Amino acid sequence: MTIAFNYPPMKNFTPHSGYVGRFAPSPSGHLHFGSLVTALGSFLRAKNSGGQWLLRIEDIDPPREMVGASDSIMRCLENHHLFWDGEVVFQSGRSELYNEKIQYLAEQGFTFYCQCTRAQLAHLEPGQTCGCANQNLSPENKAIRFNHHFIHQYFYDELLGHVEFPKQSIPPQFTIKRKDALFAYQLAVVVDDIQQGITEVARGADLVAATLLQLALYQAFKSPAPKFLHFPVVVTEPGKKLSKQNHACELDPNKVGTNLINALRFLGLPVTKELQRESVANIMNWAISEWDLNKIPAKTECIDNRIGQADSI
Image (cartoon, rainbow, N blue to C red; front, side):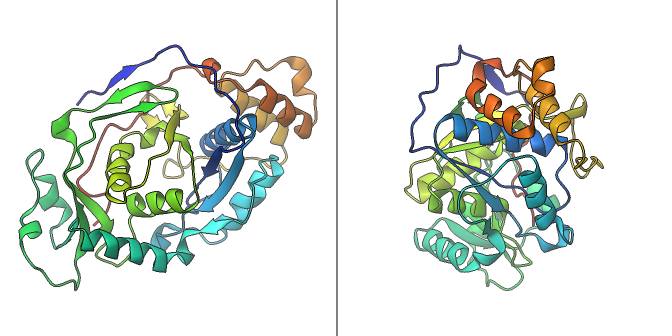
């Protein structure tokens, strides 16, 4: 499958106090260099815009969580002078809100109970909905799927420009609540971004494909979608994202300045030898004032172009 990208000349971003951005890590491990790049990029984007930068811990998948990871992430952000605005939001405390939104979708006819396995979903033809959608199944041991007709083939990305997917690659259904009663990422992230008033989602390019599914949910909720900005991801080699699953190393707390300098270089800012000798506070103040999307190099080695029928069963 191919994705069409068009890199237009970047427009100057006009700062305004209404900007609300966020960083939303999952506590499945410590922050590594790749997650620092995303956190730093989204922070600089928000602060250069004169806006707010919120922190949300996406802890809705307990089997994947690492004990103590949430505290570790917050300490790491603070050590790197990535100070968030307001209270930290934990998704694990928002089940009532998610259930209310699922009930709303059900009342609008957008959901159905599904007993299909991952393998069965994988064998569906492009654009095909599984047979469960036409049955009145009981909810016990069933996933809740979102069944929609909002086919978004493309969207505008503030860095990548026009991003388009083949229509046949976009599934008409995806999971919003799993068989084990855990909420799926696609639902929770949209509900939270709406509720928190996020005006721009700035995240890694490995989540580009998820944007189309999330746009369908925004439309179902009759809510305007935020802008989207997908940063290049750090890779260990072409096609392999630096991640916790790939045993990425935890950031060295004794090398905060070096970590930031390396992340700024990755994001294309013109780091000088003089800056490297500055304090962390001075490095961050300089970075906020010098932030410029035009300087971010176009890197597409790890853009995930797979749009699955279900992110989990």
